[in-house]
Image (cartoon, rainbow, N blue to C red):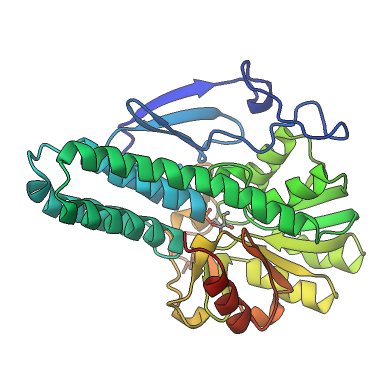
Length: 386
Ligand code: MRU
């Protein structure tokens, strides 16, 4: 049920009046936005989301003014992508606090727990969701213990969500710089799903690496897997890269092997929903196929993700929970049924790529190489905790 506001803009994202070009190099197209698409934004009324279920044909926005509505937009994939889900949940927790009718922090505490449980129950694979909620819980516990007033707690929870938003963009920029330097000077780069500005607070992870390479003057042609069944590649990656004038070609998922064999793909770069302590990586279903194909063709396969996607508490990919989404995403497209009534359907939203297929992992802290068990541990202890 959609009970939140809906606003529609027909204008193309890159030509909207008032948008400043953030164009760092004369080689970049005039429309370059620098990946600053308004995926989610805090407003006085709540969180405004670009509706990713309606892109690319309609640029419309929904306003979630309660934490329940934030949970709904996450479940229905109005907002999706691990980092964006995490920051959205943080804003959801802040909204839960701001909208409470409780009179004191002690009275609010059980309600705070219910808010966190509801938001944590939205999508199981992206660890950023639990990372963000845990961070909000830690702050709340500290404030409660310090005897802070409810008004102070509300202010601090919102400030924490804003901080996560800013940190996410900074992390994308930093991992983009690390990863962009590793991409070839020219040629095709394959990506799967959408790990772009739309999956983060801006700039993107895998697409941030590509943006950064383009900003460095590299001559990159992006091949975007369409990404059945939700078509994040065909709809979202294509839309946001076109908004930045980056050379993009959509292919069906089953075309990648043939293009690799023809020498058209020089590297693959994808995002991640959860990286286990040994480097095994959960990402959109079909990522594993790309990794195997890349290995067979001698093509580097890169993963780009912020540190909030790394789950040192999960030893290997086998322990990562994989979300099974509704069958209708497979049986239907655009309201039209594609499959016979009653046929069996599976719809796992993610798969796990074993660490052995991953050439490098790009994070905001630097570039990780195998053996990932060791490099992740070393980077975790050397970098300041966030
Ligand atoms: O089901 P989705 O669209 O939320 O899945 C998104 C992905 O698999 C992304 O690649 C991942 O979350 C990284 S986004 C920077």
